Image 1 (cartoon, rainbow, N blue to C red):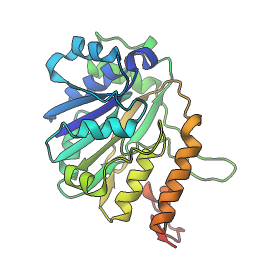
Image 2: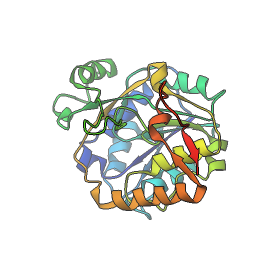
Image 3: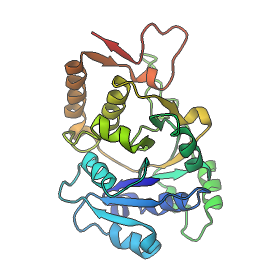
Length: 271
């Protein structure tokens, strides 16, 4: 199993959250063959930070020739792996269970991909009450007491906002062959936002089977941080819309995360 973590300016902008991400991976009862960190900014101090704390346990990949392109960072990290199962994690995720990778291994014997963990948010001041010296179980205990699961419901429309689930790049797993067949992450997206939705749309369009991690009671803690995605959000949203149009479909994200009795259309509807 390969784990790919894309990162950029994690120490300076996210208070070194990747340290806790890697700790939660190393605590798993089933260990990954490769932990690959794909660094997406030139001269990023996170390289020395990771080497100091984890040494050769983590393989650091330079993806700085296309800075601020998370799709490229994930795809480039993927190329350094060799295993049938690939897990994508963001650099601000702490896995809440030690059997996470065991469950991934079980599910991907039968499914094409696997994502949608319960996504508990921890406020941006999380670094004030965590310490590198704490055991992983103590860290999780603290995070559990500080975290919340957002309702993510728009009061005006009643629609779901999906911030309470992990998308496939934030915390997801996929068979290597499936990822290659569907064309990997689209590197034409700028900055962050909609890359994961795009990949999930194409996977559903091609008919690959999946399960939701939340239905297996898998959770994670998101060590949140200030971020401004407004610059590229409109451009990326338009690209996603154009891709759906070119396929002749609508992708109903609410149906991806759960079907309801009064629904009248599928995840993918054709024009």
